[in-house]
Image (cartoon, rainbow, N blue to C red; front, side):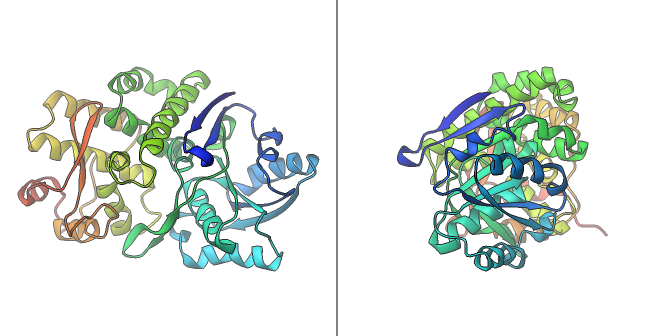
Length: 360
């Protein structure tokens, strides 16, 4: 097991990464305010891991309330969030009852938002079971739900007590979901670490084959970068915005195509390619680096061509984005591999040239 820390003063917390961690309930029990938890999961993950976790916790003397939600990005909404509250209230969950998110990014985001809101704040723990959640969404305290007009527009910053990333859970991940997680891994190389990006180029085959040494290193380095960024800028007032490379385009793709049709990581992959093309067209990014970025996204099994929503629809969806400031859409662009920045100065003609035209 490898452990690193998200350094946020009194709210600092560990991230444990390794094989066979799920049955090690003492890693969870050490962070409980009372021996009672609600485990929030979904219909896909529950048959795989809910009993294993529940039995391990029960052996530690912890009472477990299971809450099983429907699976899919399309259920990341108020109605499904209320299902969590219904169960918590029905079973009289208290302020010291910890919520445990067992699942991917949707479950983690919704459970965290429920924890931030229920009784004005109860503890929660992240046990991510997808690569995307292990390297990105489980770390940093961003929680929330989608709105039909925009992704993740309703939520709260709320940090977990601990993150437990058991790499064994990735063995049941469909290849499409694994590729979606690799999008976020590639992102860290593009925005922060050229050496890590080069390592990904050399080891993409091993990562897609779930080589245990390669996958553990990718998760650890991704979490290490994110922990560093979050510690410096928890509420995204500056530096943390770099973590949104590809996301402004990607969120527009998700909303425009209907939540759940494109996986988040697929939309981010195509979005990073669009960001690289914008950067290239603006003379910021060299042709070779732009080609390397696109090639690695493709090798990860991700789409490199965004859907033909049309420029007007893209602009409308991107206008409803958390990074909009004074009415201006802000983009994360690249000056090189490992060097990103945020700007609101992207000429409309550049966007019009890069964004796919609408279907005729």
